[in-house]
Image 1 (cartoon, protein in one colour):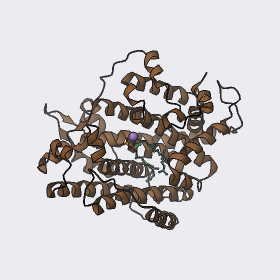
Image 2 (image 1 turned 90 degrees about the vertical axis):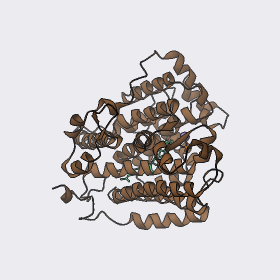
Image 3 (image 1 turned 120 degrees about the horizontal axis):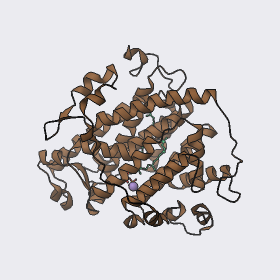
Image 4 (image 1 turned 135 degrees about the vertical axis):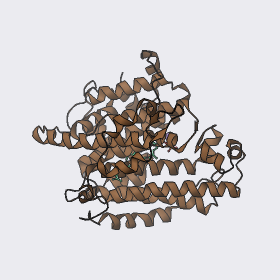
Length: 420
Ligand SMILES: CC(C)=CCC/C(C)=C/CC/C(C)=C/CC/C(C)=C/[C@@H]1[C@@H](COP(=O)(O)OP(=O)(O)O)[C@]1(C)CC/C=C(\C)CC/C=C(\C)CCC=C(C)C
Ligand SMILES: [Mn+2]
């Protein structure tokens, strides 16, 4: 019986079970062994191959960030590597939009999901909406403002991301091996090829058929989960940046094709994708800064080791959990960096289609305020969890709404004219 059907009749309220993840150990037994040591793409990418793809606007900026690795070879930084993905995604979206315009076959939601007995696609989307409503209430409310097609697509993506994260963070996490993630990845490929495994996959399969969504960011998110399994320290911000891209920047890249860019926007597609990437990075950095104590109790330190050392701090200080002046100063710098990513993201939100702007502004403002709360807690993120109170959340919603009414400006910072 498919996971979907077990999931449908399951009386349990446990998130992993409800997300259909309780059988992931079977992926491990089913999957063939694969070479798992194909990582650290940075070393494989030489300056030249990357450099040739870069647009003129950012060339100067990026060249200054080319670094030499210990063997003296010029290697690109994570930021440059990820920017390649951004450029590819932006190019793909333009191409796929054109293809879809020529060959649009609109499918209804009343079709039966292949491999199931009578499960309709509309049921699959409804289920995604329910999961979303239960685990991300405010965000769910925001999606109700979007057009029905877009809202359902975002729910389907949300559910896939939640399930992916749950593999390594959920109650069955101790059973998850790189092989299980390989199985999850081949299941992803299947759904992109129109062969979904269960009803939640079926919703995403339909979404990626209807919208110009590429598989790469989804694969990269799984790569982030692999990274989480094998790594608990990050030597530099460059290493941390790559992790943040994998687990969160990818969400931005997955979402833009659904959210849509405003027809009146003068911004380049790349710049909008870049802003979406920045929002994911900002959110993840904020997540990390909020959860320092919690992560340390799991033996994990998602902070650049070199920056800790420069501040006169070490892992031991984090495990001891004492708020000292050294810690406060270190935190101030980390918060400043996260805010810079939020600033970069803000420029892009206005370029999105009008109905998509409100939920994005709302999530940006809410997440950004977590940084203010860390400050308000006098940087004690060891034993106090920074959270945004209900009244503050409520105030943010009309603020976000007001911001969402601002149309893309003709001569904004992301304007096409800047690329000439
Ligand atoms: C131009 C422009 C600015 C466009 C907007 C693009 C956009 C919608 C970006 C969204 C960015 C976003 C919400 C990123 C999520 C970042 C995040 C918090 C990732 C978490 C990863 C794992 O971290 P960790 O395990 O440390 O965290 P927990 O303790 O488990 O919380 C994630 C949990 C990965 C899984 C991500 C999700 C479940 C969120 C998926 C969200 C969407 C698909 C919807 C995004 C849409 C809106 C409107 C926000
Ligand atoms: Mn998680």
